[in-house]
Image 1 (cartoon, helix red, strand yellow):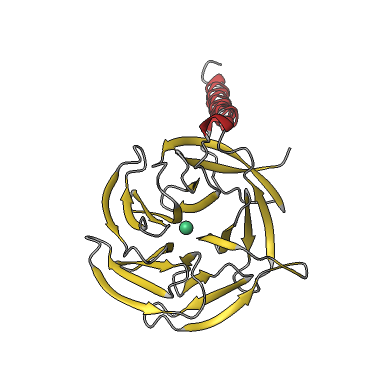
Image 2 (cartoon, rainbow, N blue to C red):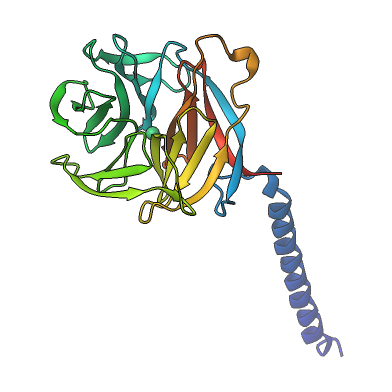
Length: 280
Ligand SMILES: [Ca+2]
């Protein structure tokens, strides 16, 4: 009789083990589900509404004398182009401290504007001088320069072309080797041209552009020029941080390696890491 009960107890044991395993798995799933709110949230949500706002993730020091016209983040550091006649510069800046690690000044008679990287070079525009400067990224030595007919405002790149704004509603796509204009696209919100496109940043297949003299960033489809949405950065720099020299929001940098989005302004004492958020 005792032998007959053996298979029964084995079945019971197997069922017990299976039940324990199911409970353990459920427990793990529950713990993971409960820990969701602490999970790192992307700076650029997968789904972007037409109107977005922001959350501040970090605030870093920024040189309040820096009249920011171009901003990128590359290999752990910021590169910044600053404007104004007699003050324009190209800088390599430590994110966390705002300290300038390397800087070259432009000639007094040119006004620095947009900035982007291309392979081992940095490319910097000028406002009304029609000169684009190309530097060695490692030591800021001047490699070459090129010329264009329009004003120079913002600059970015999509891995194939340099993309430039000139203060109008038009974006110019430049050959990164010859700097020739290959094509243009007009930025339209429905049918309305969006002018004053300033500092640019190519982010996940879209172009983000500061609109000059506003707290607004516009998201653009590079293929068609169609506006995909707006980001309201109103209130980002608190009133108590502003002085009579504080100028407008300008400067967008995205680090795809760490998924961090940075913004600042002309002569702002702060540079912010932000996360895009839906409007409440
Ligand atoms: Ca930029």
